[in-house]
Length: 249
Image (cartoon, rainbow, N blue to C red):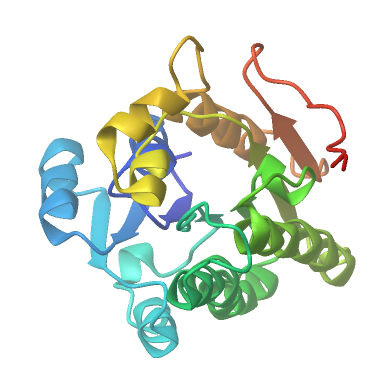
């Protein structure tokens, strides 16, 4: 990993923070982005000068492009992009959902991810060396009540990943979509805005941890360059698939 430069979005908590730590531990240089400056500063103090923090909002397309173009020389040749930033807002049914929540998820999970990927890819292609890891969700595959736009944005991430592979098949740039299930991070707290409700999501279950996902990303990054993992779907042992919903009158 000593020659790799890893760009991790959403590095102020959860999967992103664990991923930044894992790659620094292995000797890589890491660009860590997030909106919360105080958390990025703390991460920088923890991980040292091989971490380059950037305060960045995934909904600001111009800032995303400028950040990539303005990277210092030691961090300019991004070889691994981990598109982790994103999230779910609300669990309201479609006819009751807040439109601002829908727009926020689309702008971050879809538009922000696509813009940043487009900004980074030309360098990978020119160097014929790169890996894009997109963090999706099992919600891309399995609908549930209240998952309306969140699940749809993650379905975009799934299909975007596959289509990137179609375009990059001769460029020596790999693409993997990782789709976690129930994982204990700040995800539910951000979604539900209520700690008691968020804690209840994980009660009685041993969920996937941020470190589990980070280790999976690291495993993908360490595979031979001729091998591409298209998709990983991962769940806790205590999570599976529910029955079909049937509304009876």
